[in-house]
Length: 143
Image (cartoon, rainbow, N blue to C red; front, top):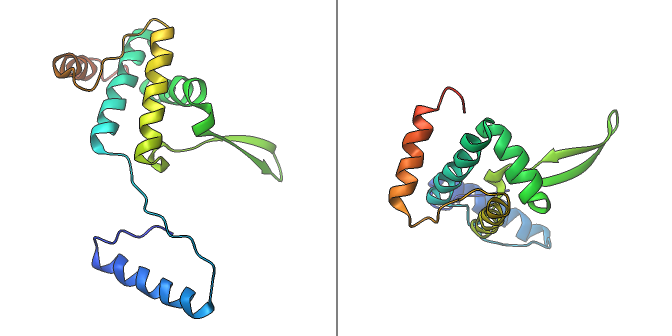
């Protein structure tokens, strides 16, 4: 269970759960979840947009196929057994990634892009990123 300790309600829930586990004498693991940043999310969206515009595919297709399945299969592809369908592949949501995992995924995607003839700009290249954003807005109906 995730708790956002910046909110009063989640602090109360967290405290109640921890007191219950303490009473039970349970074995627990406490870790801090560092979610990806908005900057990472926006940057990734623009990188996927570059590939979408270059290939003529949708953003969703590029995210699912090129970013998740090809460049980052170890982070995103999960295999599950289903009673009716047998073994199935599920794509993990990028929202579940930590900040560090997201950085690793972006780095891998940039390497994949370079290997396949796509120039994917660095986060500091503000003018190029802004140009990509403008072009994506123009192409919105197709992406």
